[in-house]
Image (cartoon, rainbow, N blue to C red; front, side, top):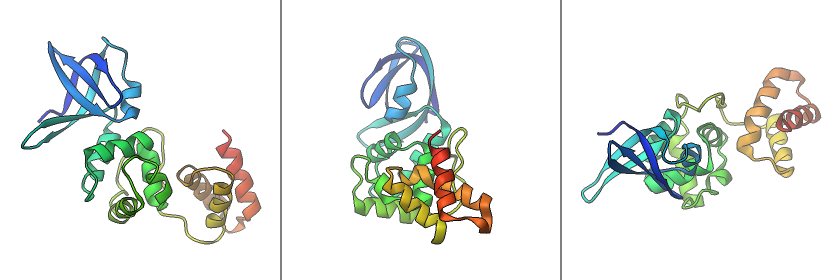
Length: 200
């Protein structure tokens, strides 16, 4: 199995790239997030690889960071989520955002990824809800420990959604503010503090 490739980027397309390692060009499929951070050809790159061997194909999937590869592996354990759909989800959501989406049961954010309908999004949330606690979330991103409950936190999230903020983006901010204010959390204060942080 191939764990990583180090070589020259010789070609980058919409959903894949070619990495030239000592004259051998490896076709690597990747998320748009990974492809966007690759250096321009013909610079040298190191890409983490997930190797998938099928009867009719030997496929390589590339990742710029280990967190994305771990999420790819977890996503593809869900029935109905193949490599193509997993890459579409990872193109739409970063590893940190994906953790927040699952923790907050944000089905709408999942269905924004091509190939993910409401039924599949529900299955992903159901099957992965208890498996994401130890998942990496990428550099500098904290994943919420649990989904928002009722009360001030839920009301604040609804208000922020009405103002155009995605649940996955707002949830960790609101949860942090509610935890900081503890029992003094007033809805107006939580919304105001959340807007101040989200505006940054």
